[in-house]
Each structure stands twice: as C-alpha cells, then as structure tokens.
Length: 381
Ligand SMILES: *Cc1c(COP(=O)(O)O)cnc(C)c1O
Image (cartoon, rainbow, N blue to C red):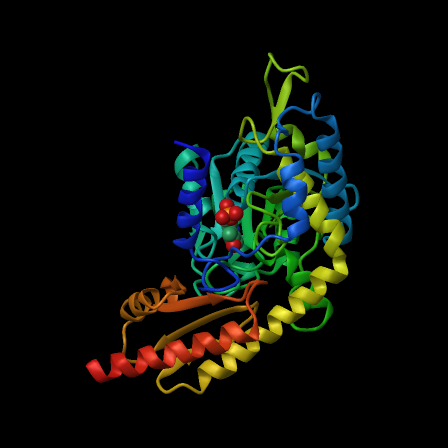
C-alpha cells in the first residue's frame, strides 16, 4: 500500500475508536497521557530497558525515579525496584520473588484482590487462600488467622480495590507480615497516587506508606500518573530484594536481566520520569483533590435520580445500580449510547472511575444520557 493510503486508513480507524476528550469513557482506568510524556516517549522509542549496559542512561533514570517516588510518596528509606508494564506484571513480580525467597507455595489475600493475583497463581502453580471480605477492608485479626493457618510466602493487600476503591489496613498488615516473616505486597496500582494525599487532607483514615513489614508497593503511572501505557512502578523497601527478580542471561553484556519480560520499552521509563518531574507531588495532590470533588458531584447527582442506589465513594469510584432494571440491561443500553462504564459484579451494579480526563461537563452529559435511557427503559417496562 502507498503511505498516503495507509494514513487514510489510520485516520479512519481513529475515528472509529472512542477518545477520552470527546467521548464518555467512564469505566476504564485509562486516561489521556500528558503531552510532554508522549514527546519523551517518542524520543526514546528505540531503547530497550532490559539492556542496562547499552542503555545505561535509561537504567539510571529508572533507579532515580524509583528512589524519588519511593522516598517522597511512600516514605521509604533506601528503596529499590523497577518499572514494569503494569499492575499485573508488578503483582506477578512480587509473587514470584516471594516464592523464590521463602520457598512456600501459598499466597494469602482478601477476596477483593485484583484478578491478576488469581491469574498469577494459575500461571506459577501457587495456592491462593482468599479471605472473605467482599465489601470491606480486610479484618487484621482474620488476616493473621489465615497467615498462621496457611503459612504463606506472601500476603497481598490493596490500596484502592479496582471494583470499589477499598483501602486495606496497611500498617496492621505490616505488623502481621513482620511478626510472621512473610513478604507483604501492597497493590496500589490505582490508589497509589490518591491514598497518601487523601490521608494527608483527612479525606480517608487509612494511609499508604512503607510501614514496618511492608516489602513492596506497586503503583501504575499509566493510570493516574498520566504516563503513556505501559508503566507501573514496582518499589521495594529494600533494594536487595531485587535479587529475587533478577535472572541470568549469558549472551547479554550485563549477564543478567530483571523482571518477567525480555525486551521492554525504555521509552516508558523516560516518559514516566518526565511526567513525574512535571507534575511533582503538588501536581498529583491537586489532581487527587479535583477527582475527589468530581466524584462527590457525581454521587450527589446520581442520588437525586429516581430508583438509583449509589454507594458512597471512598476513592473516586462510583458504584451504582437501578432498583428495578438489571445492571446488565442498563450496561447494554449505556454502551449502545456511547457511554462506556464497567461492571461492579460484587454489588450487581455498574461502576464509574473518575479519571483525569473527566470534567464537570462529562458528568452533566452522562447524567442527561442516563436519564434519557432510564425513561425509555422504564417505559418499556
Ligand atoms: C489496574 C489494576 C491492576 C492491573 O494493572 P494493569 O496495569 O492493568 O496490569 C492491578 N491491581 C489493581 C488494584 C488495579 O487497579
């Protein structure tokens, strides 16, 4: 094909793909990346961060970024870690490292844990013992009972569950992990750039930090960090725990590689470093507050609609349903009208995540569309 024809196709494909700025993408945890970080990404598009010798500069930026985020956001002392492709890979890495370190095959987590943990246990042949928690943060007493009973290599708790935005008690989990000598991983893929700020402002009671006993924390920068996909930070309280995520590769100059992938984008590291420098703690704090305010606005508006029940938001996630219309019917209708929301299966409800691209205008548009759709569905009976 001629280049001009290919471009014509691309423009057509783009027109057929929803966009965050003009459409109603309200359920997924994606958003528009920061323009400067996109620029940084394209500059370094040729780099492979699996190779720390040829692309040594990239490796330095990665170390630098991990240290800065670990120290300033999560109060670590001398953190280590690496950038991965997402919350999924970060969870895999924590699990694989803990299995390697402690040699026991069990993982303990509340049942609100992200699906990637179930998937990891299928892939790596570990046993997952789930603590029934459903719509609450895990109870520390129950967590300790499970740790005593199953002697896991790793406990995984979450700061900002994907479905409802619950924050597990991190400090107490740390005490339990420390006492029983197990790895504690905190999955903060979504909540990592919210919880520390909300705690500081008194919006929530639970903080997220490297308390005693917390081994690793992961936070996605391709969600609220506004870096291009793929980008997640896997941060360790002690850099020597990176040994458990390091593997020999004899043909490469460094003789070793870190993490679960082979070749991976150095561009992600540079782009994430860029957006972190641009936003800073203040920028992310302001963003977090703005998202909170919008979530409250949407919550208040939904509450005024007949027959809608809505859960009070913890983080900027809104879970709602209609008392008579089944959620799958409502989801279908919303999707048909170009409103992209997700499901909250535990509550047989639907879910909206207020991401940085969402404005008051989006919320008005959504409420209008929802009302129109409900009128029609109610008429149809
Ligand atoms: C999004 C998310 C994940 C998965 O992250 P990906 O970047 O999609 O791989 C894991 N855990 C939590 C809590 C998440 O919100």
